[in-house]
Length: 286
Image 1 (cartoon, rainbow, N blue to C red):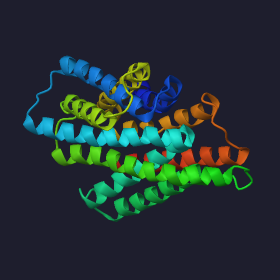
Image 2: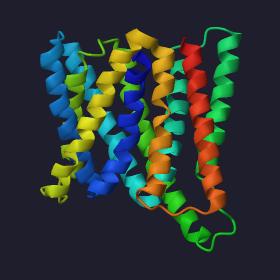
Image 3: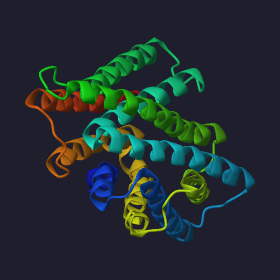
């Protein structure tokens, strides 16, 4: 039962790209709808757990949420440029690389030769995995157009990664209670989404529909925290990475994203590399 609980975040987070793709809307509508859903879930979590909130928790949470809104908004943008099947594994790999480097360089988490060796190996595996998922089939007739989309999508994804990595760094740096920070974080997410949506057409049904993606994200977040005491951070963290299999293969078979046979091999092998790198990082944290 504990392992099943630990797999719920992977199921929830791995489904976000598929659900948002089915619900439709542009990146601003998807981000705003998602933050509304996350805020609703955070309010429920607050009344369920009654965590202590203070000025520090609020400031850290809101800053983290603002950065998250940049990360998620740009990720949705990237999904629309180059598809879910390419965006999600690349984004996951880039986030893991960013967070790993931040932990090593800013928080001095690598304390000995073993951790440095495993950390560098994990980074190499993640980079190889992210690179494989972005590869085009040289025999494809649309390779030039896809390369243009890839270049544009990568620029957007780089901004997304900066936002996502910053969102976790702020919480680590602030040393605040993980449950207590959920509500202020959701408020920051909502504020950031509103700011980015200014002047855009977001008052429509697409925004309302995408509230569901926020509820999915919030559910994954809560079950992650619930699973850590039961199976440990290493196992919980590693299992959460398996969600990219759901989002990547689901986008191909459910959303109809086109891949050649060779590109399918690249994507599947790349996903396995990213999961392997994530599991190695989880093992390091044990």
